[in-house]
Length: 286
Image (cartoon, rainbow, N blue to C red; front, side, top):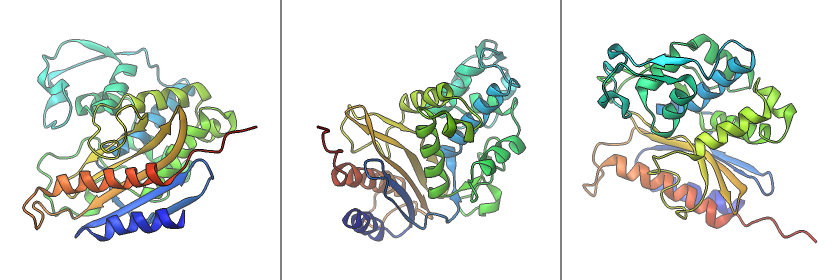
């Protein structure tokens, strides 16, 4: 783990912007981080917590995933991400399908549908109840005209360690009812969450340099100040490691003339690849 940490920090030190990460080796249980409790803008990585907060409310009987939600014209006003904004309003989908679209293509029309059924106070209560001490949800959908030099207190924030904790509890909760109860969910709901996260269609960050058939249950994000991603990486069907990564103050253009966002994508991909290469499988039993 010491050699891996050195490699991860070397990758970050090469960049002119801030980078934070958290890693848990799921073979040995070892954890490490770089500025793991420093608050960063979440981008859409916040949506994993939103999904789990919704599932908690379903478990409590306050929400129903089969509820039909009408796609209205007003829901696409000011929306930047996703695909629904290009579709003709007037049809209905289930809350379950809105939740899936919110995760796998980061659709913010669907995020609005979801957040009209659960409030920010409930989401913050969920986060704080499981120990996400650096996380504050402030908005439903970010303003499209948010400047690149916006203040942290204008957006939802989290930390690499907070997101790592969330993914760890989801993973443990998928097989352990006691861990699932910490989330206010069932084992089946945690397993469903991993399934949804593994259906992710946007693989430009931590999944970008992993083998094409590698299972990655993750949620990335795009912010005006940086890019971010986090999730659980599997090898041969078994969870190998958890990684979360955040970049901030990424320049529009790098010194070599390439876009800053491309560098952030590459940095997050290199961090995950270093873990893939540096964490061996558990030894065979017997």
